[in-house]
Length: 285
Image (cartoon, rainbow, N blue to C red; front, side, top):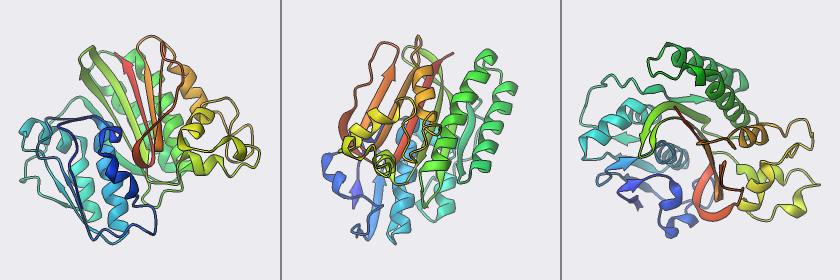
């Protein structure tokens, strides 16, 4: 099976619809080989990089031979190298021919892709991001507590609820968007997803029919799949905090996605498959 993302690859929602039926979390996934072909990509954003990591890691766990074909655009290739994508994939057993390019200093990568599983490991990830933000020379030290507090909620949520066989992953970096420089935090896992988690709460089950329904519920106060109202504050707290000028949060779980900004009300939609859950936070510097 070969997957060719678009040249400007922002997130999994841009993938062709035919791949929605190939969910590597399911026992029915029977692909013997999986290639993700990024050769024509001229731009790959962090949510797209984390999709590559999650999808290939899950497919590898199902016994498929997996390869990542790296971009021919050297700038994009160097960026993904600095993000840590190539090395972490090679560490799992995925074939990556990165042409032995060296790791160059990339000052805007605050925290390269870092794997974690337990809540204690999630705390280490948050602390490491905090320390590196404080030591950076990006001119936005005042945002350090805000960024790490929100990142802390997202990584802890993944550690506590994802039940991901491949663990969870986080990265933090400064990114130059068309509208100006921004801090971005991305957290992803290959777990059961928000829909399956919320359906474990019998009181919520009648209201959770689809992945997009689940996302809309997940960002409401005191909504939790555990049934404990005091546990449902993570995504709600983050979603409330991003309703400020210039901030945004993208949530993608299964075949549902939800974007939250100051101007945009929560309105989840059906999209392409992300096998697990992704959260992508963006804050102007």
